[in-house]
Length: 329
Ligand code: ADP
Ligand code: MG
Image 1 (spheres, rainbow, N blue to C red):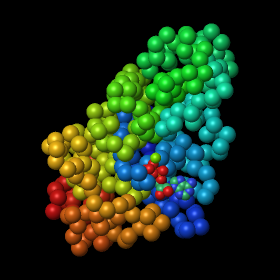
Image 2: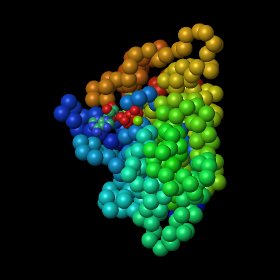
Image 3: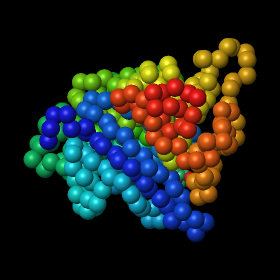
């Protein structure tokens, strides 16, 4: 593996659900890469396909869903058709997921130390109990949990919601994964705790080289945390790039709308801007640009499917109104 090989390369990923009502094109031609130590924010309204993207990367798509196209490469290795047994080895060890609900990770009837030690020894039986316990202490410390020794003896219900999520995050860190996918893990927490967890996550990425994908519907969450941002709409990434470039100069009208609806950017007291309309059904997507009907800048050309424009290195946008050099018509 070349040192420049990205930790994750997703190319033209398509994940569809074959339901009685029709084919749900939840992820429809998604491409992005995440480098070592990089934090990628994946942002979009509810139902835009963020979670399905995360689950696809972890090999967790079940029927009626299926990856129908594209490829997922992890450290240069194609994982698209990896057998489930090999997935199990990777998940939790090399690739970890943090879910919105920490109880997706935690077992309510087991003490925290039992679960954490198991998470280590399941992937490496040569680790001694003492060594494993020390790693658990370190991981709890890393997410800001005081008196780890005492906390290790507790059951999940003895923690507050915020602390429980920190324990779930600590479990994700235990095996020093190369890639962590965090799916709205802080949405239920108060703002101060959110900020603290985000800060810890960013620090971790910088210190250990772990690549991090932070999924959220809230642009403000990733604004101060991510290196890069992917904006997702109706199963596609409509804009991506380095975070400050995108925030300072959003090219896609949807990104512009998201930024415009962030409270701090509006004058206090005035009504908050909201993008009009609703996300289209992913079963019956309109032809052409899927955002067309909600877009105040739409023109006749938007009835055609927009191609991906790459105005500069690492920047991509899907909008008919954007020219090759990144200028809006
Ligand atoms: P987000 O995380 O951005 O809110 P999701 O990735 O969860 O959105 O969902 C994207 C689309 O995929 C939604 O329209 C959702 O209804 C659909 N979807 C997700 N899981 C399934 C499933 N198991 N069966 C059918 N449709 C699904
Ligand atoms: Mg989701």
